Length: 200
Image (cartoon, rainbow, N blue to C red; front, side, top):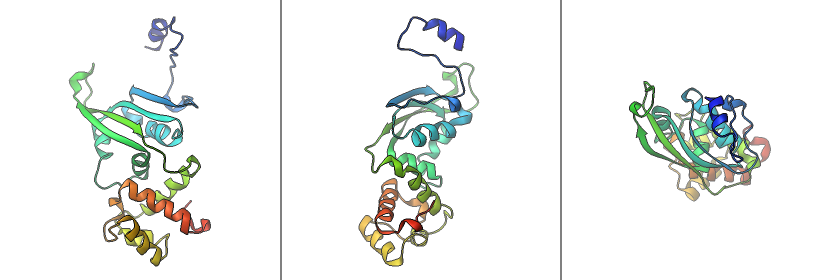
């Protein structure tokens, strides 16, 4: 396939055909988009490369992937820290399902077309690892209430203030926070919690 494509586009100056595992691919250091039918077995690795490691340059795109992991992205309760991170910085939309009959040979699973578009960034890229650590820390025990989870980082009075400021339901499970509530809590931590107490 790679050799066929190289011959097909041999005269195209603006097309470069690269044959490699995407995990070993040198992702562009400038703004880019992705249109792809990705290998289903490495979906999570590809998403991390695009929407976490390349946050500064990945603008979005359209990706065909397995339906099941696509549906997990839109669960009402978000248990995966990376999923919270992706929703914070990107608008994700399941455009439509794609049946096995659309492929040759047909796969044994259903697929989906996912549209990704980067949002306006909430804070400097340098804080992305700290933000992920913040989410991961609070989701270590996903059954905890918002109140109990936040108290592992904030003082009791700060938790009450955050609840009033951002409309949090302190009795709900921490996995029920919306992406906007997550980022608001994180920004509040940067402002009121000494750095030595930040999750790492």
